[in-house]
Length: 151
Image 1 (cartoon, rainbow, N blue to C red):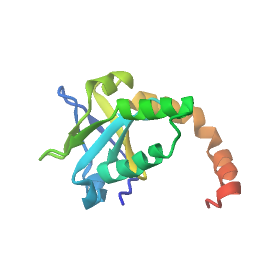
Image 2 (image 1 turned 180 degrees about the vertical axis):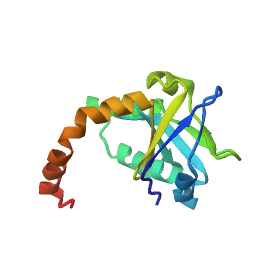
Image 3 (image 1 turned 180 degrees about the horizontal axis):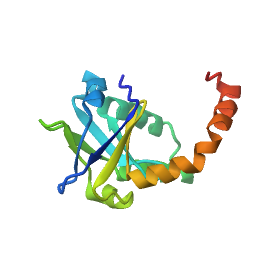
């Protein structure tokens, strides 16, 4: 099981490759075979799942009903944007251009750990997104803790 926490700023090269931080590379389970599945994430970011974690996510997708329109649409959106990328010798993965364009990445990127996956952001988008919710961190924690015993 992979587990990612923290954040790192990098740049994306002209071929759409990004460095995966050494800390994150060490957290990849051997079952991932140094392969990521990259897809559209939420909140204008890209999700990069190690292959073994993608398999778990895919299994959850398979539990959805293709008879329900919202389920079909979510499956379609999650999988049609998906692409595999294997770590190269320099510890980089390639991000498809259509995802780079979708989340408006230019040169700078922010890679954040999100437990079972990485999130790849335009740093400005991330900052705006976090500012929007910064005041509600405690409120969210209380709300979630009521139902989940989080803290």
